[in-house]
Image (cartoon, rainbow, N blue to C red):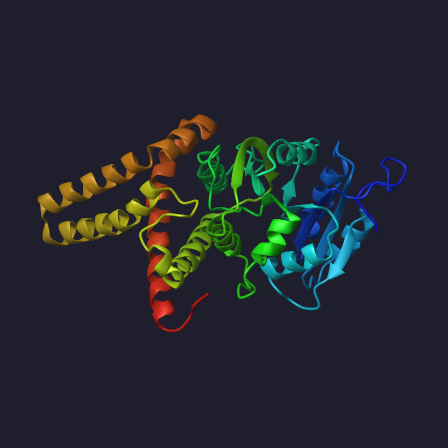
Length: 345
């Protein structure tokens, strides 16, 4: 089997302990850098399985040139099913999922193996997104720090999460759990669903706060709001689909304070609009207190924004938070409406 790295700088006689599985769709911009970072790993007993999910660019050629084993999906499957296919072709007893825009560090694989070896009862683990990033525009800083914050805050706990941007799992646990739900076609919350399933089945999953990877992803305002809308829509459908398991339980990466802020943002807008239209100062003051409550509920995240983004980022981010909450609220409403209309995924 072909593996990342040439035979001159690693021992191909070693059976792979880790299978790096990566679903790829038109990823030529960063795929080479991603695979080169894996090839620079200090841990050498690994293989790379790239599942080409119907790419129309040079992704397959780039993956092959970097020594990865390329598996053709046979058509657009979506990342969940593509990952399932990758595991079918994997030989390692540890499967490490990463996305094609993620850059690992030289010691990432070694630290993953060490974590599993030190805790035989551990079934899976996740890295966290580094707070350092290449894109420095407001929306990119905001969203990337949000992704860092929502996972690092749960480090050290057993979690019902599986963030496949960079997540490892024992192969036997993955197979026993049945893999990702094949009903998900678009990249969205298939990993959230899978993490909840792992928790229900009793598998222990942990987040390693000091195991950081770089997720090379930039956002503009439209892209950020679109992601939040679609994710909220899918999370609403997931919650309704699994309502028998606890409709009021927060088993996602989204902080409870943020969830509570979603209806508050809608209320604040309504109070502002009615207050201005009616000239009612009481409603305008109520709007002010609703906005203040949102900021209080999200203090930990806003503090992180100030720490890593500075005052210039923190101020505009408070306004961006309100806008994002409105997009999330709209997505949740759309999820409920479309679920009632028969759209379950």
